[in-house]
Length: 295
Length: 283
Image (tube, rainbow over all chains, first blue to last red):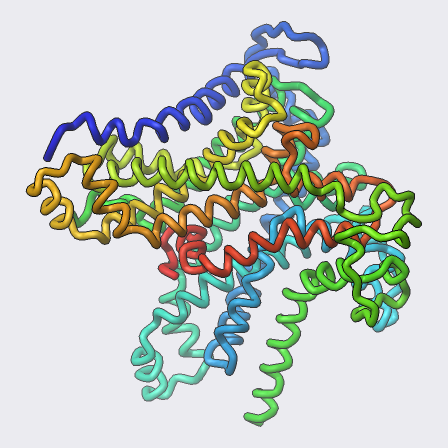
């Protein structure tokens, strides 16, 4: 082993970048979350203890945004998981598998700003293809993004469209890695399709499904772009996601940095917890060469 | 019975393909439709008079007051996206590679440093958006390329470091040692021996960084406020908020924003998948 200084010099740029761009902002955020810090009311700040945190629980819009984020987690994520698993099994071994696989990946590669544009046109009340399709079944026109009852569904559908491919991809790759012998052996022993799935494939896929689930939860908490592009949180506060609400409080017209910081601290804590779970699930330490086997 | 099941399977696959591809198809076809076919009932799923006027501008589109008739005014945004994207891509590749090498070979900072760097990628960007806004305004960097380059680096570097650590770990240590024996310094080994050997990994990191920077929305929205620094996704955001939205140019702008990302993503598919799933899928 040579000079110890050189390796440190090599990480230095990344270190400086992250200290100044993440640690410093996070420290600033925690500091301001305990202060009255509202740019619309002047630049001076003062210490107010936990008041910003208490405000969250009496703030109706904040609670609305909790609810909608919870709905995304409770409805969109399970649909994505089931649909993704279903599609992975559906196209396995079919003719043209590769090209179908690649085409199914397109939605998750499209930048969210662009899919927002596309879906806004699709959902258009007067001329949109979605309403046209429904009209074939005699359903009258629906104001997808403007109606209290449908706007949330509209966002959930976009999320399903964009992220089912992600789940599909993981499960599909997992299926490829199951040795065919194992399935054949079960077959020889007289297991039908359902039993092979239940007793061979599903147990082997379970760790992967778990990773997909947690990664989807983490991403769901970030949902912002698509809401900004399509409903802008409306109608009312129906489609405010938590991230979108922070944006509104802190940047778009609130400028209430203190309160936005308190909201952000909560989100940061939850995310860090989930990231920890993911790291355990994918054995990040071993992947990076720390602990476990050493070469 | 078997045939019925097979037919059913293909029908289901077809339904899936339509569901997942139609929105993109609709965007593409709309971008090439003349203005009289944007708003029709029933919607037109094909056009016999495909045109480039949404991209290049044409007299007929002045129906819309000339303000949103075409995407001629996209150029400053395109320029910003290209400059920010390429800068992020180059800087990210260099600093990720050097950090990844130090971590993979010398275990600098232990597991803690490595995990900390990588975990940054998964944190919600909104969390840093508010403090970054305050900090950048104090530094007078709001609405500059630098604000975007620096903040995008934070998003893309973790993925780059992570991918390259796994890449460098696959290069046998003996190769480094041979270089040392021949009298090369750590830096020389890194630049002349490891760099060339890991060219595919470096290319992947460059491409992935470009993609992420190109499509990034939230930080670009918060840290910029006009055509001097705003990127393409924000240009789209501006279009859509105008009360009279012209579908043709809007879609055309969508294509310009989407095309490089989709093309590069398909090229770098393997690494993209590995990175998105944090090694749960080898790709």
